[in-house]
Length: 315
Image (cartoon, rainbow, N blue to C red; front, side, top):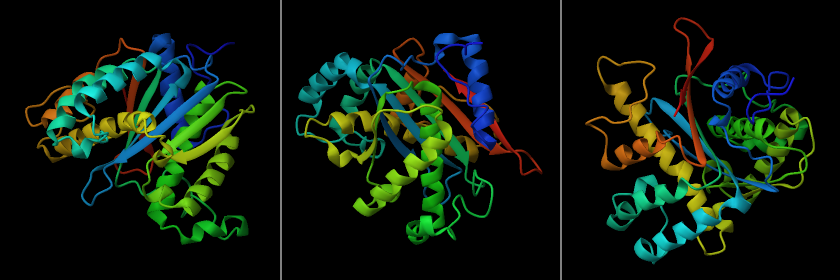
């Protein structure tokens, strides 16, 4: 029996929380087959990722990913170059934290409208900060194994972040890609890719984890940082999409957490206490009729239990 929509089920390969998310995705695409993009025609899938909610006191760690058919991004590329000429001619970078800058704020709406034309998926997951690990055991990796000696120098929280990030990328690739496709993953230069040595270790970890999800061979599988941008800001602008989403969702989740009483299981399209940038981004997220599909899930823990739960929000 063929899978509904454009998703290949991961029930046989995924473990723990990823099996639960896979079940949610299968139900979603059975109801709405076009809720996920068809990335199978692409010769190259380009991935960017960004994160938020890592500061002290954050209720959730938010991980956001963009998977795109890079060969079909011509309309996006044309529109983003036009808006750069109008608003960002000095080549400044778009990011959620820097949107207080007047030029970036003016560019935000046309930037999001251009991003609508990226053929791909914006997938975001928020993990309750009370959850120390999504993986069984005291650490996500057996550091006593000599093959993983290089990771003994990684702080536990950074290794956990790397594992979460790589597992989600591998899970999404296994569900959406096809044999022979090339994959390029660009990461911001943050804690999991802070220097060339760490990026090399991360790439090795990516290849190892991806092989546990994929049941077929890809073409090239490469990992780099946004520093690889050729000066056109193309990679940086693709990376800005998950950056903006992660920032807006993180702000919303923190505001809702601080509200009394909280209303669980609700994604707010608008609230009076949203910042202007979060308000604009959340309205944009709710638009489901564009080539760029958007999904969001929240991972929490069941009351009085170690079991993990998933709340799924499909826009």
